[in-house]
Structures are given as C-alpha cells and as structure tokens.
Image (cartoon, rainbow, N blue to C red; front, side, top):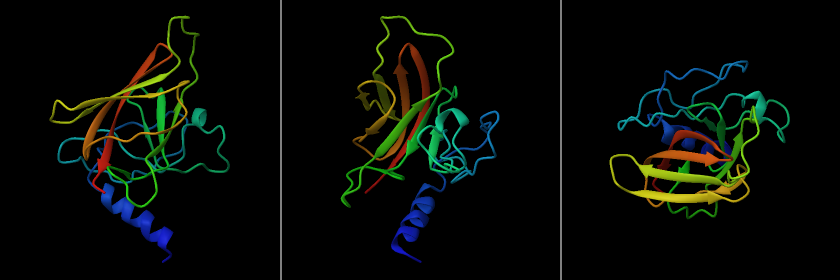
Length: 171
C-alpha cells in the first residue's frame, strides 16, 4: 500500500468513535458513507462523511466529489476537511485546511450583516473558548485550535447561523 493510502487508512482509524450516528442525510443526495458511526466517548455529535457533498456544495469540484466533510446541524453550511483528520500542532508540514461552503440563501440579508464567517469554538467539557474568523465569508481557511478534543463550533455569516462539532486529534 502506498504512503498516501496508509495515511488515509490511518485517518479513518483515528476518527473511529469520534462521530455520532442518527443524523439524517441531505435531501436529494446519494447515501453518505460515515467514516465512523458510533458515538464518541464525550458525545461529539457531528459525523464526518465521505459520501457525495450536498448538490449545493459541489461548485468547483469535479466528478463524484467524495471528500471528508461535516454538515452543519441546520444543513446551511458544510466543512470540507482537506486536513483530515484535523490535528493540534501539525509537525508534518500539512495544515488544518477547511473549505467552508454555505447553502445559497433563500433571501438576501440586511446590509448590517457581516459577510465574514465568525467561528466560536468551545472545547467540550471545559470553559475553553476560541474565536476565529474567515474574512469575506465561507471559503478556504486554515483553522487551528489549541487543544485536542471535541469542539462545538458556532458559525455566523451574512445574518445566518449554524453549528457543528469538529474533532481535533493529538499530533
């Protein structure tokens, strides 16, 4: 098996047990493959899926667009995980690249709504909270968090909001 294949396999093994089942699929999409389907010890609730992206999130992707991703609880945003698994203190030269893609808005937002994506992440079981921002709104980003564990992420952009859980592993 090539090094890349071993890295993907290791990512899947590391994520085992870090996601929860029971979440419905995006309407109109093909069945998704869940990287790990059992609840995490701490109850980290968002699934990392490797099935097709929602139809509204495929712009810029070609073919089947099967990539690791997490769908927001409301289904208004998806985090495409190019740095999967997300890690604290990466030492291998890679990074925690996340492409944020929001579902097209049904109605325009008011002029006072910031288009920037505001991310408030809270480490499960603690008072640790960090804030990150993606200028210009959902798009490519590198999101580093200070500690391993399950992070509850509150996302706000253009008068909209959604939430998800992201797991950051040790190095």
